[in-house]
Image (cartoon, rainbow, N blue to C red; front, side):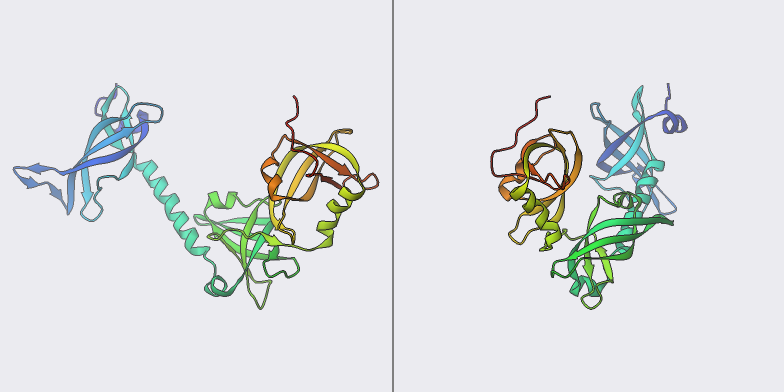
Length: 304
């Protein structure tokens, strides 16, 4: 049993999040208890252990004059399971959370889009093709190469920029699967910045190399059926407004698997789900050129 031993509670107690429900100044003979401008407060807290019933407990300690807890404040605590009235602030966890928050604030400040690009830069969609990450203090400096397509319809190109991020944000940058919002200098498209605060735009493309293969497959291909293994938005669309998806498919008659990039009509977008089966057409002479035929019938769920 821990009793009231602070060290035992911090070492062996259970962790929980607690909300301050009341704050009182400790008083002796009617006088507020203070020490070096730190005031002793009694906090009434509602402790909420994960998966267990919440309970009320009290905690007293000295707090600086200008950083005193208020009602509604949340703290990590540790409590004695055999005597839940015994709690201590989990200062180690609180320090970790504060450090993570400070790193996030620093990252947001350091990664802000330059003022001229934020005001006048051309918005675009970037596909991450390479990322090099270097630890710099609490942040990760990411040198990111992206395939850029701008909303002004200019030719696609690659560009590299640097952006400092908090570790959780840096982990989300993965070559080959991550898309980002970019702002490009109108006078020098090679100068770009990644924007973390703007939605990635869907860019209209007219490149025949991207649009003709599925059209040829639908016109000249052999009928087959495919199962969707996975799919991902590309933030691209045809001139008629159909969004283009990267779709990994498995062909029924030979079980071959490969990825296609195909426009999806708005009316069919909801049916495009992993595991669904569709009618398709495939070019015999170019077996990796295949297109799902959205016209004949709705998708079906394959029988296991």
